Image 1: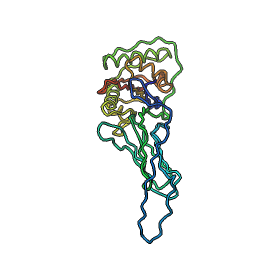
Image 2: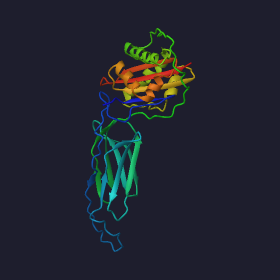
Image 3: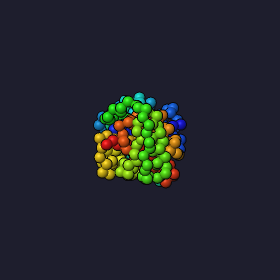
Image 4: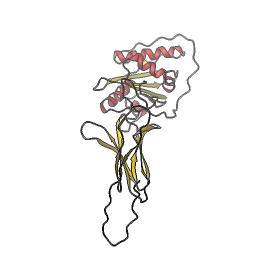
Length: 300
């Protein structure tokens, strides 16, 4: 199964919300049947005032397990065969050590309700409550999410040339990060692009983002404090005319992550854009030893 990858900025992202090996795991793609709760008993009040007609014996609430659609997590619930209106509430819960946390909730006085939230990897289940007829709980499912693919704004790359290029000498970054730079430049050379120079400021932005994702257990081009790729790069003092970013999670080696990026059209387009002159690479492990990878590109 493929690793989750992402890409953005002046460019795009991959990581089709799918299961990955060594990274976040995904459940089977087949949908599971909805879980149905039995109707709750009603007790007459004995008051002389008119009462609404009783519900059908077939009235029940059901909820489907969470699934990924268009890079969002969605869960739907429904009231079926019900004659009287009632408030329908969905709570999307994430399975965590201790008490499971409600990460999203919503309610409406209608017979069908769908809840949506931004895609974040984890194990989720949905709880639906019909305040006339009971509660239903879906099966839990582990979801692996990827970054969206926005329409980038970039400078068109010049046509490939056959000129000979020399890789720049650099002392920036770790051995693993410089392996990524070397393999990236090897791919660029095949398309006639000049090698990228490993820039200390771009690396600072890349390492910072990889470390933040590893520490806070998320995978996205946007930081949890609201900053995007451009904000992080500019904060380092790097100035340029174009930027791009690739991210990935779970690959165990430089060769594997560069290969996965090159097998993704959007990531490959960033790598093979001859406009870019500098690169910063960040490779940071989380507490489980899983590596979060970031490539930041710049042109000046």
